Length: 365
Picture: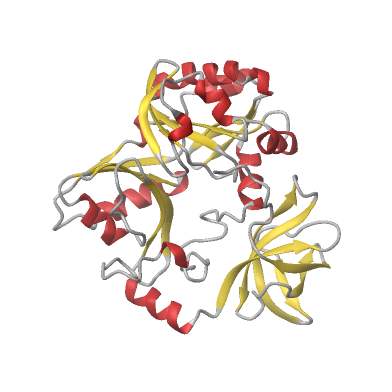
């Protein structure tokens, strides 16, 4: 049985196309993926992301524990967030996630919706020997995201917090539309914006307040379809498509989230350190389509008659007007300017490796 978020009825009333996703009934689109996508790029959109998972980590060993299970440095000051990978001993990725530093002994991990059960079992299986308390707050947390260049203008009238002073990947605790919330300047669209974590009962009132405040800016609700095209234009990775247990952070070109220059030990470090030093045999790479169409997940890439890679995510980029894709390709073929062919419905279309992100005009601060 698929769950419903606290905003499910709002999506029904707005005429959303609703489909099962990661165990939830979620809005895929309202007015249309391209329209919603361009609204976020030009003005502002609002998302229901309440299907995401939230784990609270508390205790004297909170930093020590997170430093062990995550690849990035957890020793951050309160009010800061950080992106990281969580890896298996062989270097494969358990999940990619954002963690918010609440206090020196309290953190909030936000994991991908499809991985909640797996991630929860994983973090619990490694807490032995650490003085920490773990709480799965996924069912007790709603998440509303306000994204776009006008996001701050929409939000500033809904809270007494000084949002202009909240930097990228920073957060404050305050009230939004009279409801308690963690207000974070984070998102996965490439635009400026905020992610609002709150109790599910508060979500409908906050959603309505955001929609009302955003009316003068042309705000629209945005579904998971446009969320996917927005993140792809930025070259952001999607777990289950671009990364999973079979892919390491080094192969995914996430070397910047590996705290290898410190002496902190973390699960998978030895393998990842060696792979970074010796260089992997393949890399995630961005490709632009030189022509019509686009390759989807699973399409094969060729150099002449030889297969050299596979597409992990692909779409028409609504902002750019042409096809783009991320692909896992053999080393050497990942270099900018490399030309290959993608097989799409028994025909081949030319693609060229480019430096990410595909879209470089975002308002992200």
